[in-house]
Image 1 (spheres, rainbow, N blue to C red):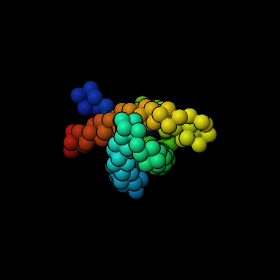
Image 2 (tube, rainbow, N blue to C red; image 1 turned 180 degrees about the horizontal axis):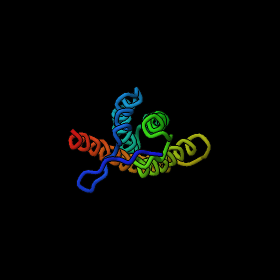
Image 3 (cartoon, helix red, strand yellow; image 1 turned 90 degrees about the vertical axis):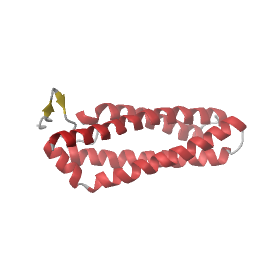
Image 4 (cartoon, rainbow, N blue to C red; image 1 turned 180 degrees about the vertical axis):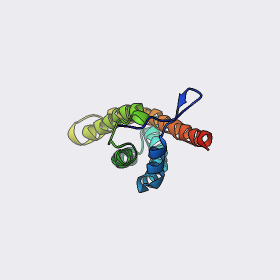
Length: 162
């Protein structure tokens, strides 16, 4: 049975004391801490390349490679994130503290995977593929904001518990 998070002024903290200890002790926290900014940097480069292609019609190959790389990094961070969740919360996905972030992540993965499917298994136009990438990137940006909010919340919780 999961220990209930502490409550301060009617607000529930993100982690129990045991979960916080596991989070701080696991190497997977460092892995996530490295992969998240790496993924964001790849995202920014790819956004620029996709936008260039859509705006001026040049650089399709570079934009395509960037979306494939972004998708690979996304898959990597999702697998390692699931391992992190298992270590910290005792389940691979949908831990209560990150339930909605995980739900939305599946939408992000679906859109990125649709791009990969379209690229390798269909005759979809370059423009169609790039607009799928745009949709995937909008979803990713929302999902990244969810996780940044949780990171901020965890830091605020740590200040309260001191």
